[in-house]
Length: 228
Image 1 (tube, one colour):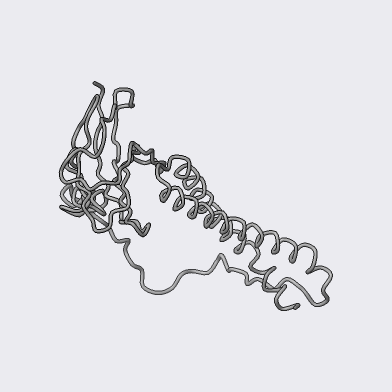
Image 2: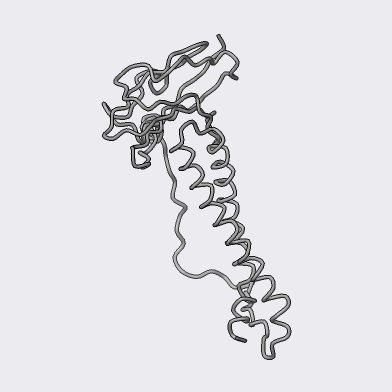
């Protein structure tokens, strides 16, 4: 028991640091899952969103309990157990000179061509020609006012699909509309009014789920919205 408490005390701040990172990540996921739950259109979509929300909530509660347990052990239990002492920490000699071969700092270079290829790889992820893809707008297109979004949703055992938008740099997605019938290079639904949008760069995401509630990787493209 004493050795365990010594170990916990020695690495206490490291444990708190890891717990804080995990809580930060899953609290964001929990908030996003809650939003998706509210915006869900279909029953199967609501069930999936609720399942994701519950999973993230379980992780958050578990790590909060871990933090509480660690605090209790190191603050209240450890002082009452004989033989529990802080392990000595090695001191660092600040006057020591580094030895060995000196290495120059590597430099990196970038090109416009490489940057464009990287963007295409990131924002074209999940897009499969003739199965899950955007027909209009295409990556890099500029749109304004009222537009009709077109694409292809043609997969085996289709459950439903939805298409969403988000400003570049914002992880919060807003659902535009949804459907449950295959589409081949045609309108995904009704028109989309961008007249009140702040001009700038946006992402469009097409999310497809099969009849067994298995979700395909989303098809994401970047576009620009201008003032009408």
